[in-house]
Image (tube, rainbow over all chains, first blue to last red; front, side, top):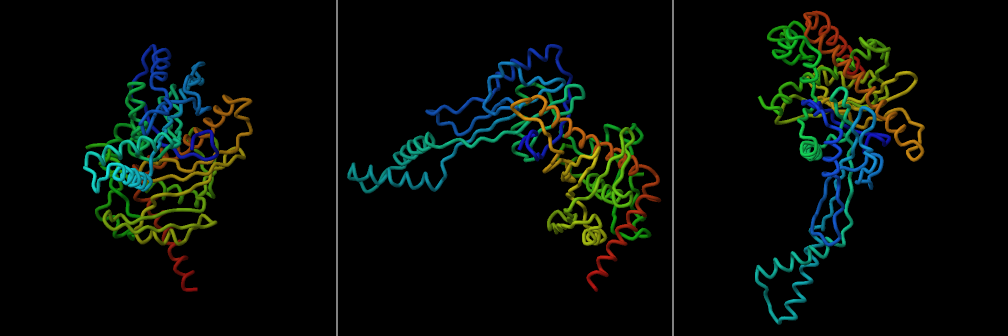
Length: 216
Length: 183
């Protein structure tokens, strides 16, 4: 679910590098280069991934550079996947094998023949499969270098990081409590943070003070 | 140290922040005044998850409830379990946000912003800017409160003032839960 929907889950990142001086022109080219491409009907591809307009999942052309929105770059990552369910493939393969065995008057087929049948059946079924489309939004605030991505699923975040790197050639660092804390602490506070140990809330105070320094 | 190890090692900061936020909300009647912002209300909202620290054999307690007291959850805290997820409600300028925070990354899950009345066909950019503003607002408030927490956590008063107060609060909740069971 993206940011425009009623409810969203998201991961936060920092862009660690400086924007290039010609970022508008460069990024416009790169975003178009890595825009989403529909899976062709005759293709045997199982998935396709790329950028689309955050306000329109079917727009992958960006004629009006819609990804620049004020101080933001906003895009959706679109991932289309089409699959042939394993059991369906197995059933169709068995049927095809039986037909060929009957045609050729054979009791058995070689391993190579069976693999050939399997590839052909898979290709035919794949062409009939309707892709499953998922989109995840990215909103990048260019003024502060903070970026929100509308997924908390690790595998999706990894795909996003890969495409982001290819497109913008910049490094992202995911926010978590420790690096977020570092961003607003002085050097002496950072040293305390480095040495901080977990607090035990459950142990009675008189016992807890032994071996618990609370970061000091 | 690689990123994953660092995240794992420092995970306790997120757990302690969620506990602190719940405690502070209970003590301040939900009202927080961030350093650079206007007063905001944060309430624990219906659901909290606690886990044991044991990596091999995790015991998980999920508490649902209408009230922020969550006595059973506080009893679990008193037994040494740690808050790993908590749902909150934020009220600011007569508008409400609902969201769940996790301990590991402080990611926002199921974040519901106030309803935006703009139409995506008539004014798509207006809708975009409004939604992004509302999401940034809740992120900003939580980051400011996290900043307040971490400064308290690293101060000498953590051991002498904050921690005893949190322990008393946990203990009072745990005792109340135990009394409830006896009744």
